[in-house]
Structure formats: structure tokens, C-alpha cells
Length: 598
Image 1 (cartoon, one colour):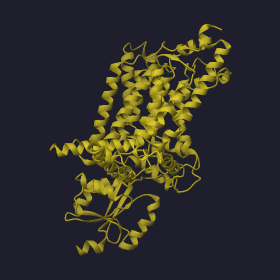
Image 2 (image 1 turned 60 degrees about the vertical axis):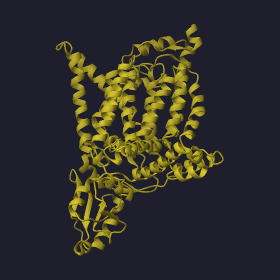
Image 3 (image 1 turned 180 degrees about the vertical axis):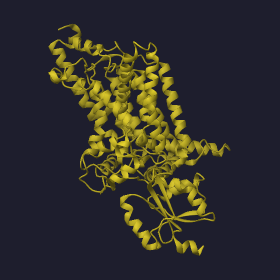
Image 4 (image 1 turned 60 degrees about the horizontal axis):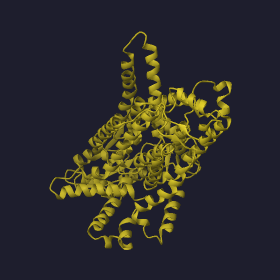
């Protein structure tokens, strides 16, 4: 056994894609452009139910932050903290705190006579979520470029940017895109920590930020531990047999193997020390509701129990409304196929297929049916990426896990799917270059542009077409929006589609009136008025009978509300139907008694 085998290092500098300031400048440009795109069309989206709650929380937190700035002693009393932070303590405080800071900056600009930093109040609350989306694309580009090359990294970012469901969520003051960013960064930091002591600290801090964002982060250490044990056992076995150097050379010779991070691979689990030492302190430090150490454990216990025993809201799936377990195991996999663009799925399949042999155990790679030259990289990065993609889907696939949020509950796995889509695109480009190279010398320049344009175009077209009905959009695999409606799939949730009816209500009630909101919250309605989409004299009504107009959002569990409207209003004929690709989204009924009396 060589000295190199005995001392456990794997020199991982060979084959590394050097990522420099130009790459980060390109990533920053992607980030800025995407945030600008989101800001440009955010006004088309009415505020969703959950957003309206987070707006209230952010305003409460913002008032506490101002108090903290002016009178720190008063702000740090238990009474002041609870008054501000007790609202919506179902979720940690970090992201809602960022919503608050964005709102405070917007208000400060208003006070300065500049009209605010943002075009609307809703944009001020939503900006941190949009910024998270832009930062995620920057991270995906850098991560993908390090792993599979710059072309792969660029398409990984683009394929996530133009995915209809994440594109919708990227506009919101919610946690789903921020937690996707936080988990992806924590995984990236862990991957870098395998070869760098400095990144060990960052891995712990990154997990703390993920904990401070949303409870999805709880399962991450388990995923990382599975990968680390897999890698350590594999490397240990190679050392024992004296095959480590040869196996490493084989991996480096594979053009499609993930490029190792710079540094020396270590099988000592320093990261496993960093996570519990650094993660929880960051979690507590960013959530003042936990600062009273006499109640910290009790309050954290309430928070954990809330999510471990979360109530079940109804959701339609193949013509059946599910509101209690057991839920269908295949649900997240079918919804992924029905909502992720086919181009992305196919290219990800090409990328995963390229690396499939490398993910097999050593004994399986030696069988005749697995023969080939594809080898795992020294860190077995494919196991990490596939684990991070599949784990969120597997958690939702458990029959007892609530499914009411649809794809938003597992879009944390999509960045890793997109990394393989980037690899798949790079593989297609290489094949095209090989095919055309002899006959077309310029193929090395034209092939990437041609393939990129052909693959990116359908993603952009689908995503733009999905707006502002992102949660109603389905891909051609489901038969599009009409096909999904025929299959009995969930048509929408959160009541945000009310934002598409503001022009109708303004025209129908020029002198004011009342509207029954159905699935839209009063807070979301108020935001439409704050943004200038509706006048203040068009008010919301708590009952069907006292409203001038009645909205019914087309979700299965509102069928009884539809029947109530028919009975109370004496008509089954709506005066307006909001549709998306011909599929009814909201029906609006007129109250004849109220309208005649006006």
C-alpha cells in the first residue's frame, strides 16, 4: 500500500473547473435579470392566502425592529417580543424578518418623498422571495459549472428559472423559494466541505440558515449522512485493496464525471460536528420568539409538533378529493411529470442516464450488464445529488404526509434535477459536435447555440404562458390545462387568481359594492386595494347573501359553496367566468336582489 493510500488524501485538483470572478459576475447578471423579470410581471398576480398572513407578520416584526432601533431595552422585554413575534410562529422568523426589512425600506423611501422603493406595496413584501430566486440561479450556475462545465451550469439555472410552478412561487412573499435556495446552498457548502476546512464552518452556518427558513431543512443532515457513509465506505474499500489511485485516475479520465471541488478529499466527518454546533445557534439567533431561554425548548416543541402533526387540507387528484391519509404514494412523482416541462425531464433523464453506472455499488458495476467506462468521482457526488433530488419526493410520498401544497413541498429537489438537465444538454451538444464536426468545422461554435436555443425555447414559452395561472398550469404529458381538468387534477389553491378579476369588478361597480371572496382572504383583498388594483369602495363581504357579486373558485371542495350560491341567489348562470385555456378558474355570480336595489 502506498503512502498516499495510508494517509487518506485524494488529490482533487486535477480536472477541476476553475471558477473565477467572471463566473460570479455572470451569475450575478443572471440573478439581476431574473429579479427584474419577476418584478416586471408580479403585478399580474393577486396575493395568495399564505402571503396575506406573512404580510401581517412582517408588519408586526417591522414595528418591533423600529422599536429595537429606537429603544433596545424596551424591545428586548418578553412582552414586546411576544406582542410582535407571537403571530404566525408556525414558521421561523428569518424570511419574514427579511420581508419586514424590505417593507421598512420601502416605507422609509415613501417618508422621504420618493414614492417608495417599489412600484407597489405587494412588491415590497415580495422582493426578498424574488431575490432568493435570483440568488438560487446564481448558485445553480456556479454549482453546475464546477460539476459539469459552464454550459451545463448555465442550462441548470435556465431550466429552473423557466419551470412554471417554481416561476409562480418565485414571485411570492413565501418560504418555498427561499428554502430551495437555503437547502441548495447547504448542500453545496457540504460538498465543498469535503475538501476544504473553511467550508466546514460554512456548511454549519448554511444549515442554520436553512433551519431558520423552513422545516424542510430537518431531513437534510440525514441525506448528507447517507452520502458521507456511502463515500467513506467506498473509499475505505479501495484503500484496503490498494486500488484507490487507479480508481481515482479512472474517474478523472471520464469526461462526464462531476469535477471534484478544489482541495484534498477527507473522510473525516468534520461537517457532522459543524452542523449541530453552528446550525441551532443561527436558528435561535434569527428568531426572537425563542430568545427567552426558559421557554425555548417548550416553544420549539410546539413548533415541531405543529408540523409533525399538520392538519390536512383537501386537494384533488384524478377526480378524487383527498383530505385525510392515506394519500397516494405516487402523487409527487405524477405531479412532477405533469408540471415540469418535458424538455427538462428528458434532458435530466439523459444526464442521470449518463451517470447511472457511477451510482451503482462497486459489485454491481462489475457485472456484465453494467460494463462501461463511467466511474464515480472520488466524492461520489452523484449519490449526493440524486439523494437530494429524491428525498423531498419520497417524504411527500409517505401515505401520512400532507399533500395539500402540491409541488411547492418538493421543489427543493428540483435544483438537483436541473443540474442533471444541464449535464444532459452538455451531452447532447457533445454528440452533435461529434456528428457534425467532420462536415461542419464550425460545429464546435454552432452546436451549443443551436441546442441551447431549441431546448430553452419551449421552457420559456410554457412558463410565460403559465403566468399568471402558475398553479393551474399542466404540461402536455397531462394533456395541458384542459387535459388535467378532464383527469380531475387540482385546478388551483390559495385564492390568488382573484387578482385577474380586478378589471371586471371595477367596470361592474364604478360606484362601489361588495364581493364574497370564497378562497381569497380579506388581507389579500386589502393588498389589491393598497396596490391600486381596486378602489376602497369595493369591499369584501363575509356572506353570499349580503354580497353584490359572489366569486366561486373552481376547486372540488368549493362545490358546496357553488350550490349555496345557486340556492341563495336563485340562479345557476354566472355573469362572468375567468378561464385559462378554456378551463373555468373562477365563476362570478350577480346577486339580483342587491344589484336591483342599488
